Amino acid sequence: MRFRIVGEDIWREGKLVLENNTLFFYEMKSKQKKGLFGKIRSEKKGEEALKINISSIKDVKRVSEEELILGYESEFSGEEGSQLAYVQVQMRAEAINDFEREILMRMNAKEFSVFFAPSLTKEMRLRKGILKLSPFALWLIDREGQKRIEWDVVVNVEEKKRGKYKGVEYAAISIEYIDEDSKVKSSLIISKGDIISTLKKEIGEILSKYSVEKDISDIENQILALIYAGAFDFTEIEKMASSFGISEEEMRRYLEHLSEIGMLEDANGGKRLTKRGIRYMMSMSKGGK
Image 1 (cartoon, rainbow, N blue to C red):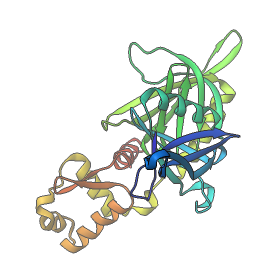
Image 2: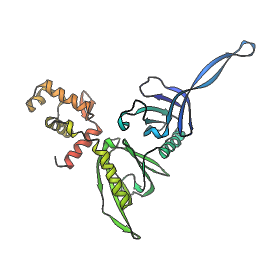
Image 3: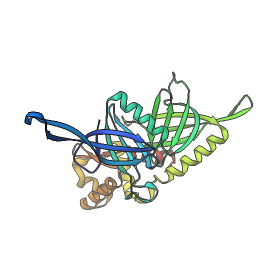
Image 4: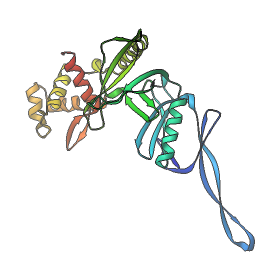
């Protein structure tokens, strides 16, 4: 395996050891020694490069088939882990699947027993498993695998009709989110009524911290609406600014601010909405604003 501490430029060849609920990252370094008859031989020695307590891990993000990123609280993290430290890990696909699952099952996060359908389709099948919540994402986990949904792309959480089965009240919520292809998808979660009530409250409290409305002016809302509709011409910034009754310099400042707060990103010589920006615009339309 190899790993890279985010913020550093180098990838390190090494080994990973899980012991006493702590992850030890060892960097394997070659050390040359003279053997018999003056021949040079090389032996590898592990040097501890990083140590992470499992209880400090707050995010596990799968990047590709053979790579994931761990987000953990370090001595430099902000309040309630608002700023995590990160380490990238690369392994063979089979090994990283087992590693990801082991970390998720051990991760110190709120846990709920649920039935779930990762995607709402005609062929959907309910699976029995657990849901884990952290301030950064939720995970749906069962024997078949795990699915991560980060809060920054959640568009809507809606409670469905309640019902009784064998005298026990059950409820469901659907979670709408934006996937990797910028398309809206939904996951369905079912559990006992009191669990769903608690879960919905917890999710609502987390999502409230992801609101950016207070940072966006009326003009910026109009700019975002035009970009969302595909009606903003980035080749004619001066004309777009004039239509708002502002200068080109002011328009560029608004666009820069929207980029700084994660609503826009650079694309083909202009700007486009990020997933967070799409989520915001969809939330605005649902709220009738």
